[in-house]
Length: 234
View 1: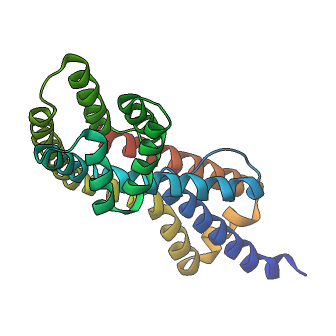
View 2: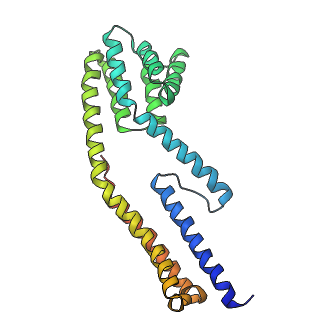
View 3: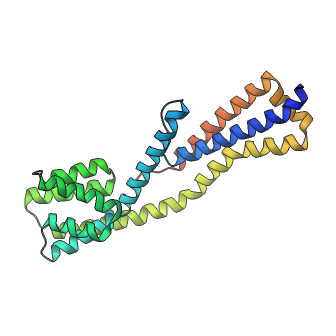
């Protein structure tokens, strides 16, 4: 097969590789990437990390409901363990599964505060840390857990509202990062079909492939730099 006949396959191969690279960037944005260069190991690792992040996210979204439910249940006269069981049944999903582990450990002899601390280790978040710290300190000092829970509800609600506003304000920057990272790919495809004679050396010469590699490295680095700038931890 002639060199000229191979050129379309080279271009399509480059486009396919660029699309795969773009997919990997998207996977990185949801924190599902990591590890080994071997695809047979990367795939399951990405899937596991993605499902783990989704599970933690689903749990974190219900911490406010958990805290409100505990405050109302204990105000009605329930003990903490009873309140946990009642609220977890109402919330269901990931929250019910994780609380069932806490209750199982409690029934096997572990202190309820220690079981909650282990839950915070499995599902780490600032709100969960506040909840477990409040329960531990209140049980140790003998204060009113109901009053602490009610104050904690207001704190978590205010934090959630602030994070939602922050997410909205930084959404434009994140979109710009993705747009800037994908712009060279679209520019290359457009210019190749408009001026193939000018763009052909990029895919037929060693210098061209070196230039493409340099562009890919710089684009990926720029993408993560922009993401780091617009990502604000609170």
